[in-house]
Length: 217
Image 1: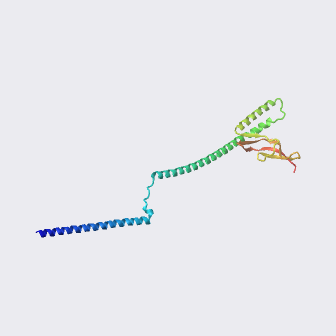
Image 2 (image 1 turned 45 degrees about the vertical axis):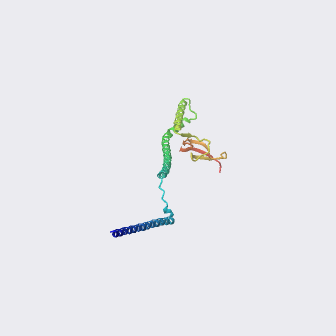
Image 3 (image 1 turned 45 degrees about the horizontal axis):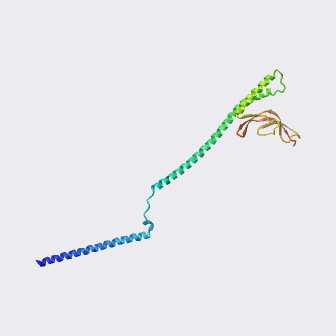
């Protein structure tokens, strides 16, 4: 009986010893495997240092700021274009308005010119009789009223007696030459002219019809 118990004890001891050796060997193998893995990672990190660095997380506030800046620049560009287009529209509208106004004034004045010319002929009577003089004075007052109404629309009458001849506002119906003329000069006005004044520009509505004196050739 004692021999059998001794054998069992010896077998158990050997079994535990074998188990311990196996566990130790497995532990060694696991440690070696972990060390190899760490070594491989270190080698890969050395070969590819960029991939080894963790990518920084994007800053959402910075992204929003960049997006806001781009939107502001886009709005500035859009505003500048719209402003330029509006300025062009204002210039075109202003020019169109001036053209329409000019044509309307021309049309209005054209209807008055013949009656004004007829009244002017009556008022230019050099030697009226006493009976006719009050009538002629009345015609002169009416003419002044006409001219006042026209001037409110920037329409002016001009009578260029003695002035240098200007072909843009005058029409020469006749001429004469003489030593007394240093340049082409208006020596007689057959019919007064009218012009429209806008700022500093003048637009002829009807040229003055004149006789000019010219220096001898």
